[in-house]
Length: 525
Image (cartoon, rainbow, N blue to C red; front, top):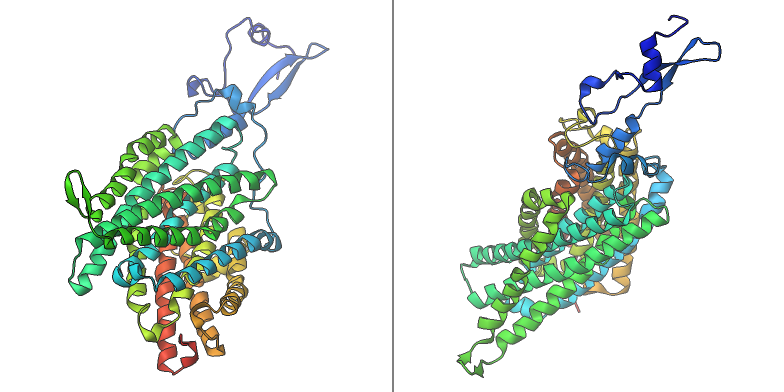
């Protein structure tokens, strides 16, 4: 380098001459990653100074598009660069810290499923459940819908909070309104489809179809799904905002708390609404100005029409947010398929709950299904957050292998996701022991817990969670490699598989216990 700069260089340094950027060919709006300029030192010699890289500004703007599916940020570059440092990564966690944060929400969620099991054990003897047995098919479908919508909502908001997309009031309000409107649309539509599935699955074995029962199932399912999603969605938003303020990773607490009251609220609403509508069905017709009308002919359609009439409002609100607009159009496949899978589990429950050989199964079904779904939802949310922090769906192929991982990689590798899988798997036995003891103390189903029953029950629970954690490791990475956001697509499938595996394995355990003559597990007076 010469000791004196050329005259044109001096003009460029003083801003009087034409400037040349090393990245000028990138087009307008692009900022150079790095550049060098020569300044005059005290002795007149040129001194080369490296201009500080501004790639971080571009990185912040790329993160703004993360949950908005590639849409441009409305914020200016100055606003983006003025943001504070990104929130601390939740991935630098020890096994102890993961377990400590997950333990309390896990136990709280478990006690919620225990309460749901106790409620199901009581309401199974109600007249509406005895006369309209298809309501049993709705139980796993609607409880699974809570997992499909509320846990997906919790996973989306947890990821958004972890990468700083809920830090400003404007972003926070946009995320809240868009996501709440989205789950109301999904709850109404999927609740209606779940009632149709219940009618079909109830009609196929018996060949009997009742129009009043079909309207009853439709009105009960839609009303339950809508009200439960509204209440649980508001709880989820409060949990995620509060956890960020006190420094807790939302991925560890949001999804279990979503299930803590979800099963209980959903099952209580389904039982109460279906019972109230059934009373109207059994009442004699009333005399109106237009003549004599049966109650179900106008009450049931009015209930359905009311919630369907609100759909355009929720659609408009959901379309305003870029974060939910894409899900509104493309997020139906997982929740609908998951509802169908859960309905198969409901068919198993419908055929076993009235069989004396499966006595006491009703009280344990929400527990084993809820625990498995809660644990796999936590793992899926954590893996999704890890991938979001390394890029956008479909971009980072190194983080998303397309081949199935080996069980050793899923459970015994040194990375943080494998560590969390081990912690979640180790929570199964102590958690279920606490829940079984609680059920026994409350005399749920009048079931006596014997050693052989506990062994079979724990085997079913461990096998369920083991399969779910392995499938979650493969499914989240596979969806990411195909450009799908796991927050929107993976959890519905995983929770539905949890319902099917839990109900199926539990029914198999009860059947084996009956074959070997362990009669102490039966319900009896």
